[in-house]
Image 1: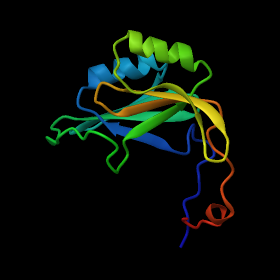
Image 2: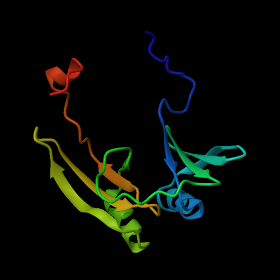
Image 3: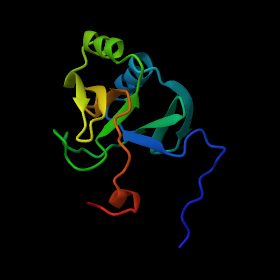
Image 4: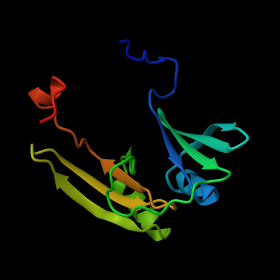
Length: 153
């Protein structure tokens, strides 16, 4: 079985897509508050996908013209629920988000992993109530030997 071969010419090897309810508010949030830049778009009869670039990351805000009515899911339910941005000005960025009225789900704090790695993180809800986390510093420690072998501990 062949694994996918990564396109080395692509801006990003992984693109994250968010299906949105309120496209205008989501575009403003990701451009004005987080600094994403318009990258490209795809428009079909039933959907409009807008791509945004931040560094070597592509975020796709996807708006279906006839969306399925689904309840908002609160809390950390399984599934793709949050986006993490690595930043170097976490205090200023967090203060700006709060001043602009975005609701925090995680106050700015310093965290220490079980392996002693120290970093700062915080989080706010975007306009569609997705979790957006900001992280400053390295939050990962090297993988355990079992995880490095692909095993789940």
